[in-house]
Image 1 (cartoon, rainbow, N blue to C red):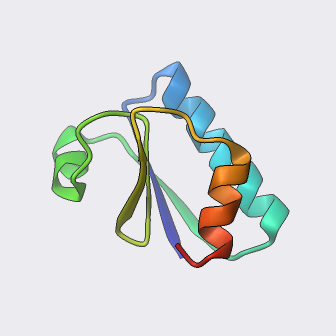
Image 2 (image 1 turned 120 degrees about the vertical axis):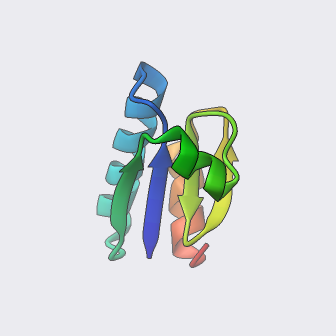
Length: 79
């Protein structure tokens, strides 16, 4: 599973990245977490607002910091 955390590095983007890391650690699911800061790459993913979470190519959250429970559900369902 590949999880992309999209954002330029602002406080909310950093918070989203940490919550993703915590959720992955708690669920025990193997996942690579990639930080995407390049706006062109974000646009190619279909992300136009940050922070955003993309799991295995599917946008799960845009423009807000998701809760740890939301992320846990997404990764446990296999996206």
